[in-house]
Image (cartoon, rainbow, N blue to C red; front, side, top):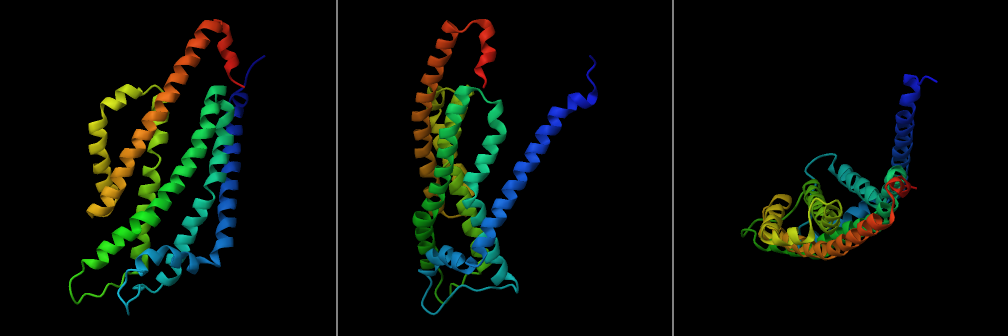
Length: 264
């Protein structure tokens, strides 16, 4: 029986169709969440702007220097919030797409890692809002020259806080990245622990690159990155020991032809 080119391409076509369908579902969910939140877009912006407004001098306020800023700034923020709230569903769709190609032990590791990554990302956003913003804005508004009124543009403020949100959200994923690298065999827990001095310096370098040019936000990003790296090393040792135990058990119990049964 001959195999035609069409038969060979069919699996790829099916994967592309599935990928298209899942991307379409993601877009629909994000759009639905956005439409539900759009009515409250000004309230959402007011909530995000509160850490700065509490430090503004009496008689001053935030301003809009462009005609469309009063509409576009809350619109952009609401879209960002809609994507954040949709992250669990987005990751579920990603998981459903790649799960059939994973081994059983990889699935057992992926589920807690995906859940932890979502929680850590949200924790990074919360840390930025409740800890970093009050310190940074309190410092900025207190060191202005005499006679200069602090009236921040709403679009510039949004760009500033979104940059910090992304920086801290991504930085809080360090334990997940460390565990994945250890599990993949790229690094070992002992090997990465020996490079701790370089990691600490790298945290401060990344803190300098990912945050605005002030020592407060740089330090507040670098220190959690270092602590989260240490957390990743601790859990990485657990994953590494478990991986070695599983490999030893497989070597002693599985026959050479049984390795194909590892998949679902």
